[in-house]
Structures are given as structure tokens and as C-alpha cells.
Image (tube, rainbow, N blue to C red; front, side, top):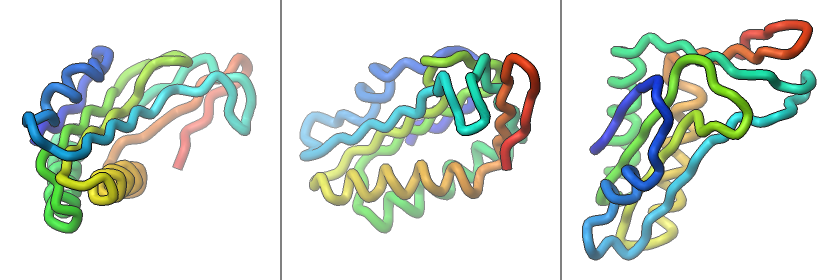
Amino acid sequence: MLVRIQENQIDLNEILKFISDGDPGAEVLFSGVVRKVSEYGEVEALVYEAYEEMAKSTIVRISQEATEKHNLRCVAVIHRIGRLFPGEISVAVGVSSMHRKDAFAGCSEIIDRIKSEVPIWKKDVFPEKEKWRD
């Protein structure tokens, strides 16, 4: 399992290489990208902050639970912190499994749970204001 919180850009090839074990059957890679426009207006940047130790341990737990539930072979999760600009990847989740249904379900569960359970906070930066998200 690969789990990391980092400030530098995410290398999707690193994740693909990590989850490939030569005979997975299925590999799924999800990347979350900073939007140019949100429901509140044009986005200049997003600022991510995390309680890093707890965030990492929570992602590990979520990944372990998804691995057991969906028969995953490998899981890789990298989440960025700091100031990100439109078009940059903020989070990436890669999984491999013997079957595509398990891979898709596992990847979806992991990213959904990261968004709802992990202590990572996001602030939208707009031309005229800034807004912290729930």
C-alpha cells in the first residue's frame, strides 16, 4: 500500500507503476483536478490543509477496509496539500484487482470516504474572496 500526503505534484505514472503487479486483471486510477469554476465563481486557487498524521492513518484504514471488502490487490493514494491552481491534480487513487467491478467499487469507496472522513480541509480562493469548504 502506498499512502502519502505531499506538497509537490502528483505523478500518476508512479501510482500506475505501484498498482501494477504483472497480472492484476483490472487497474483503476482516479484523479481529482482543481476546477477553473465552482458554484461560487471563477477559482484562482485551492488551498489544502491537513492534520497530516491523522489524515495518513485514516487513509490507511480506509484503504485496508476497502481492500478486504472489494478484494483489491494494491492500493495507492496520494493527496496534495498547499496552494493548487486550476488544472493541477489534488488527489489520486489507484487500485488493482482481479476483476473490474471490484476495482471500480474499491476506488470509488476510497475516494468517497477520503472526502468525508479524512481531516483535510479546502479553501476556495476567488478574485474577490476566499471560502473554506465543509
